[in-house]
Amino acid sequence: MTAKDIFHDTVRLALEKDGWTITNNPLTLSPSRRATVKIDLAAEKLLSAEKGTRKIAVEVKSFVGLSTIYEFHTAVGQYINYRLALEDLKIERILYLALPKDIYQNFFNDPFIKKVISQNKIKLLVFEIEKQEIALWID
Image 1 (spheres, rainbow, N blue to C red):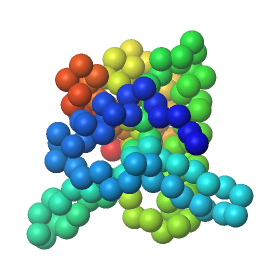
Image 2: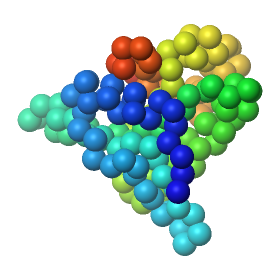
Image 3: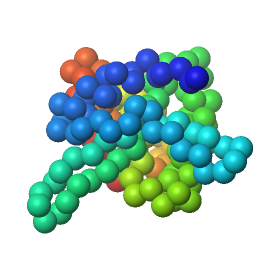
Image 4: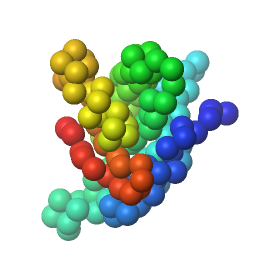
């Protein structure tokens, strides 16, 4: 059993406030016999009758440990593995890495970090801890 990130419930509430329906908590995937991964949340939202339903998967990261760069390495690795698992299993969900707004403003604006995010095509969901709301979607 994996431990929930300290902001797991904050992100869940923020998604629900934004009109998303949580469909899996967590979303468990088995892309191979020996590999099982658990993405923190899966959610759906009806956009309109013409556009249909948007489906996402969200990995929540707090970045509250001693080394932000170490947590960043872990988050990027998880994101890449989870995205590949979704692709291999042909599960049509857009994967987002959820992070607190202060970490986004203070760490993710670094040019090197921006380059890693851009080159790995990592989508971000930035949330406000106190308001328990989504601040930004970055595709």
